[in-house]
Length: 155
Image (cartoon, rainbow, N blue to C red; front, side, top):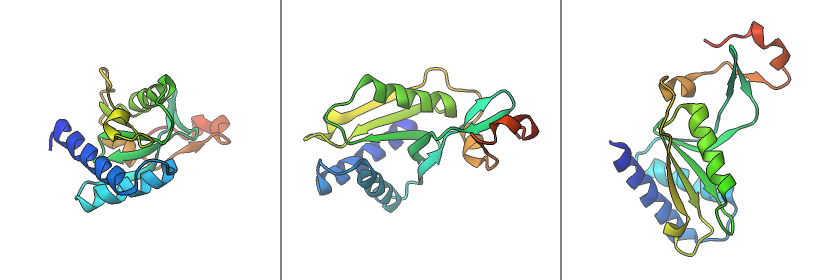
């Protein structure tokens, strides 16, 4: 499935969630519903995916979490706010850069018409490493362990 086809499927799933539950819920509720809807459509997604920071020769878990990581190549950042702000786009751009991912969707469910809360963001300079490498990493360094970082190199 191409990125455009996958994006179309994700947006369709988001519209279905919005039709079913409407605006006004917490972001976490939309996250659970959209994850369920994507899974029911045979689309693989992970909730609250850790997004580490790479510093020198280690990875640091600074608390960044991707709301939904779809098919290992599209990042979805969900919101339930009155209006999307530039900081919300900046957050998704940061996740795209940290992951090396090419494509992200910013979705604000707190809109009467969901199409008014959709924003597609493309990372024009994705990292050359495949994003699957990040998805498969298991060895993480917490903030407390960062002082011992040199003893836990990246694989």
